[in-house]
Amino acid sequence: VQQPVLNRKDLRQRISEAGLKATHQRIVIYEALQQLHGHPAAEDVFQLLKPANPSISLGTVYKSLDSFVEAGLIKRVLSAAGSRRYDTNCQPHSHIYCCNTNEIIDFTDPELEQLMQDFFSRKKLENFELASVFVQITGKKNDPGKDIVIRN
Amino acid sequence: VQQPVLNRKDLRQRISEAGLKATHQRIVIYEALQQLHGHPAAEDVFQLLKPANPSISLGTVYKSLDSFVEAGLIKRVLSAAGSRRYDTNCQPHSHIYCCNTNEIIDFTDPELEQLMQDFFSRKKLENFELASVFVQITGKKNDPGKDIVIRN
DNA sequence: CTTGCTGCAAAAGGTTTGCAGCTCC
DNA sequence: GGAGCTGCAAACCTTTTGCAGCAAG
Image (cartoon, rainbow over all chains, first blue to last red; front, side, top):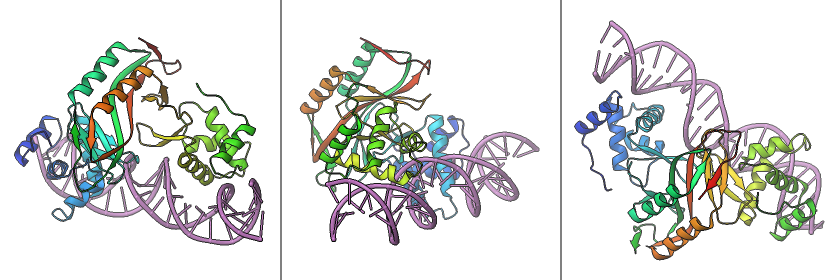
């Protein structure tokens, strides 16, 4: 986790500034996104919130996450299995997908981002409006309990 | 399309050599994959085959495609929307997703593949067994009827 | 007060499963 | 003849939808 964890007051403000109503549900949904690692699915968020918010509904979680994505507060990413997962990190970065744990791990490497940017500013795709370029790394952790360590 | 289009006799052999029974259904399913462009979904294959093969079932298409993937004959890829699509091109290459047409277009660029290979042979990920690295390009065709042209 | 959001429940994809019968080898 | 595959239908899982009522601004 490299970005600041926001408290409820800041979350309320952030959601408001994005043009959305800062409802209690949305605040706790965003809070859950910050707490869950490995890029949670809507269901993961729902399961985390249900004990403390018994009346929250899965549909609301889906709708709120959609609203956040549309407002640019979070990003939607796909797991290698095709399910939708959510990412509070809006900085350019790549993802490592672990087939063992089904986790999606952030891989932030300025050198790689630079490499991609250089390549695609040189290579012109005609008849195509480029929206995004990212690198997807797939494999599996040897020890699922431990983190991945990057060495240059 | 950069790889040879196989006729039924060759397909039969290819499927057999992969350790699978060369049934009529599998042969026509593979044939359909070769004919369809933009990386078809199981449903696309089914729709193409149904007129000439009225008794074929969608379940068989799913199972055959899975068998092909497991045997290494084809690859499974995800559309930007998360649905499963199939690719007969097993050479290393990247994909361009068009959000307008939902097509997946092959982007084969030796320079890019080399760049990726160099980068990841240098960058070591400890506690992680790397399976694949690929670049995902997203955007939209300006004229959906025309192809994308790549200029260096 | 009014717009936008929530909860519910039903529906909609897309994919998988179980199994009896059929085909390929 | 036997293992493996097919067709069918039901089940499954994830996501979307419609709508009446509620809460935020």
